[in-house]
Length: 240
Image 1 (cartoon, one colour):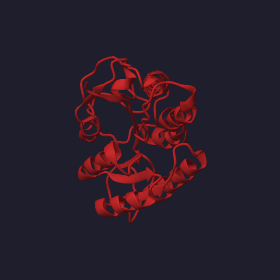
Image 2 (tube, helix red, strand yellow):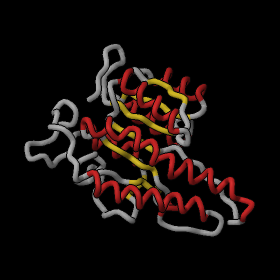
Image 3 (cartoon, rainbow, N blue to C red):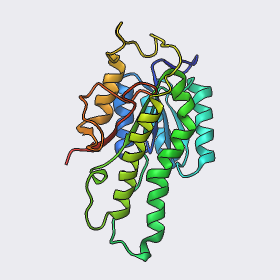
Image 4 (cartoon, rainbow, N blue to C red):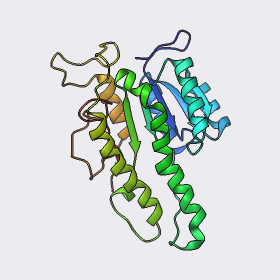
């Protein structure tokens, strides 16, 4: 567990797109379970008010997932003020639905840069902090990551992309285990197979009524998404 004097106690969760919707709801759920939060979003006033309301050392950081430098600065603040990252929730994204035409070029690029490249960039920047203690990585997907329909071609492409990237990353990072186990950070049973109550709570809170994307092997809740462990991460998707 990351700790920094004067910033409360509990594991640290970084949430992108935390100013509204799923991001805000996730922040409230994790805060209620004792997580300290780094709330990232473009709307500084919204996340500042939310951080003040949630307390326990939560901080608001204005950042844009399409602006790498803003994410690098955010990671620096998280490390300095909260001691590091235990959980990264890639939630930020936009959905712009319309028939596929050349007139939608700008919207197509916006969705790809925010939904797919944004998650990739944020993970690149925060990965070392997650690896330091075997942290958890959660990528939010969508029904559109398993199905497609007229009018959502590019949005669906970004979510299929999230799923493929997530599965590849799961296989890749499981080969590089984190440093020696710290029982204060991720307590496990003696045989190393059971998850801590912290991680089980995380999965249930973030997943809510969602289930693992159909592209990944089905596993019960309470397994998965620890960097360097066999079941690294899930992209979560709404139940149809």
